[in-house]
Figure: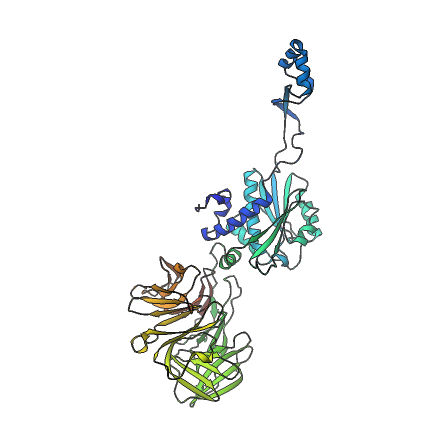
Length: 582
């Protein structure tokens, strides 16, 4: 049983299913929804049943039930008796009646049509928790179903499996009066309280089934984007309405996709020829929706990254094989539009290829003279388009090149990291040979930080870039995390033997920290100010790992040739590729 604040204790039984970090925001929604719904009460007119003994003494009743002491008063003091009779001060025996119990059954029917995708499903979870606990406290049985289900099946238990079942329910059509008629026949005329939870149109269409309903719709207020509008109709009373704020975006995503953290991407076997080049690095696309690697035969592998471990089937890699005689040296994307780029080198030239829609062929190319080689083993450089004809290229040797007017100009500096979109004013030829780090803040604005404390000769490329943060090593044991162009500097100290593979930023400075591969090369951890959290464990040693500079996704390759991508927001592996044995 998880530890909950006092305000959430009334729903602890149902909330105990969820991890504490999800139970707290979900419980807050449940508490606000409870104010709209109220307790499960006895039906009106509940005292009109058969007599069931003496219930007490009251001030009203027929004179045959008048107390004997009052008759004695009538004989001894008739005027006082009359006064009491006029002012309703006489005492009568009250009879007890058998009261029909509160509805012995509570049924909730959810609308899973297209109007209820996304944020309204969080309110479905809150309604499930609330109405299940409400029925339990009233001693009533509980069941829930889906309005669009032609079989009118009901589920009585609220378990991890049934919650996942509710979240997986989808229908392309809206609920209708026919659905209400079908359930009315299936439920019969017993003492059941029926709730309809869904879109306003669907709930009203089912009004003949029950007057109790909870209407849910997205809030279209630009000032309250992460909120929903809820109206509760209880009996024949006027509806109660409220705007409910959703949990933080990452928690909302977890609630909807995998609230119990048990789902992980199934392994996808790829054909034997789909192997990764030994020593390849991994580059993320500008929006983290793709990763790029070099294949064992020198080809470019583009692998879509699913946004959830539930995506089935997992996406297959796409392959670009450079033209004969050209060597793949880099990759890039045109931000905000379809346009993947590949950089190859041949005979003193760099060629920038614009790839076809299916990424298997070059749809056009631009050539730039470059006398120096830019390839280094199997590593890929990052190409950042400035416009249609000018590019910045961060090659595998850590140099920054400007590709324009048919020439590749090499700047006399080495840069530690580069984001996916750059500005020409940020670099100047002949700048001091210090580590120049180019990054972006949360609004993706560009900033530059020249780290005077990290000379190239001493530290080389000891720097990593995150979304709005840059981490630079300033000693053998200490890294400084620079937060934003004008933010504060935080210090983080990995353990000896740890390899820093990324840096992530959080609203809470104590959670802004480094992503490291531990010395055993089987764990990837997040080092915050006060705690170190394990994010990934691997049975096989990890040969390469990298955290993305936007969402913090972690991509890794293991000794057995498998590729995985882990999402910190999902707290699960969203992609797992395993080469098929020849």
